[in-house]
Image 1 (cartoon, rainbow, N blue to C red):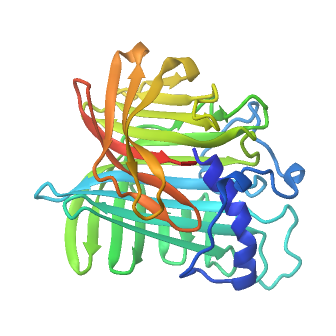
Image 2 (cartoon, rainbow, N blue to C red; image 1 turned 120 degrees about the vertical axis):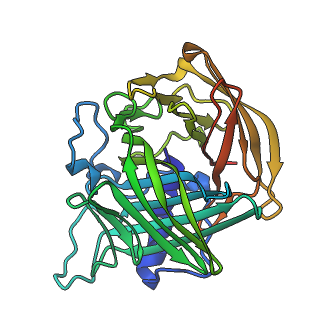
Length: 369
């Protein structure tokens, strides 16, 4: 899902090696086009292979022989009064090199971890967004499969008896949630092999758990909210960057009220058109699954919004047509200003979904604008 974001991490890892800081107050900016380059030592990393069979629980954990990886949670939550909150907690891993560290004292590492934590407070029209970065050393950051855990400092996702727990806090904003899977694992693409372009190396291994029953607590500036809702989880890893004519992508994860879950994504070229490798999936209420290819759906922007902070213009209303499922969905952000302003700038936030006999909510990610 995040080939540009994951490649951007490669450009900034050297800064962390020099500073060792977990929270940079003035993070450096990243040129997305430069981030699309292969970087150094690409041939010594493994590449996504259609012959690879995903195995669990092993594939819940890290894949250190691939250059980049992420674990991605998003969801929509409501308190008892119906007040809406959207959340995002994502962890990225970036390999610095293929070789093992030379020392044995635990300080050196070849892995960097990076995370985003965001909370959308729709009623207050506020978007809270934070980032962290740290090296995988001395248990400061890391990922493991059994028991499942990914963490940076006190931001973490951790396996519990019924699913996973999420926890993150910063600057008066605190998220503490428990997630229980309502649907089985969904292997994206071809049994978990997801092509992103014509070159066979432009691909990833990718699976989702599309629906989690979610409950817990949110705190904002001392005010506490008990919340319930629905979450989406993605896990993806790869080595190759996108082709030179790609600038970004548009990704949607949608929960309809009848229990249907939908993911669609289009990879955009420099001229703004899709590159012919759009992909997606539908999980029906009974958990049956339908993998979508490039010709199975169309995504069209119908309205735009310009950020007063960065001056970037993003689509702010979309129509998604899925003819094979007789669906036409209209997607609109709950608030427009859900733009991240950290080491790289992108838009990701909560959306409402209408136009179908069963409306819903979801999350949308827009990069390369």
